Image (cartoon, rainbow, N blue to C red; front, side, top):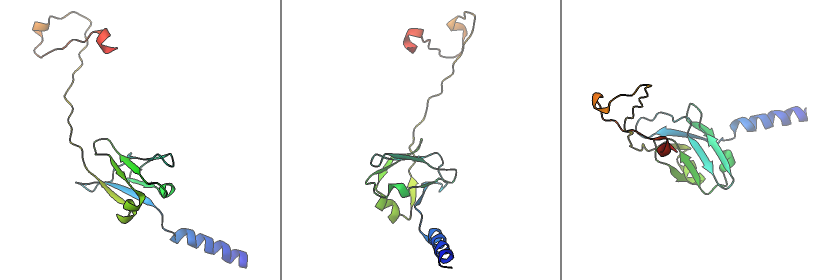
Length: 129
């Protein structure tokens, strides 16, 4: 009977113990950010958020600096205590940048540059290397 009570109490404790699940959200839309990278140098651990923008950071309790990164958003370096004060919800700020449009055209025949109605820049194989 004591063994059963002990096992049940351990299971109950595991259910009520607070987990350290961080949630990364877009600051503007409050949408979860999936595939964000959460990394730390001491201890050397890297995590990736799931489709709900969540990851378990319980391994990073002792970390002084936790780096949060995702493409299109500003990187943040934040402490574990600061994340805990925000109830493990961190909002990422969008990084506004634009990419110029690039069109690659490849043909097997020679074409006069004056016959093409768009601006063309030719790149040699030496410039590519």
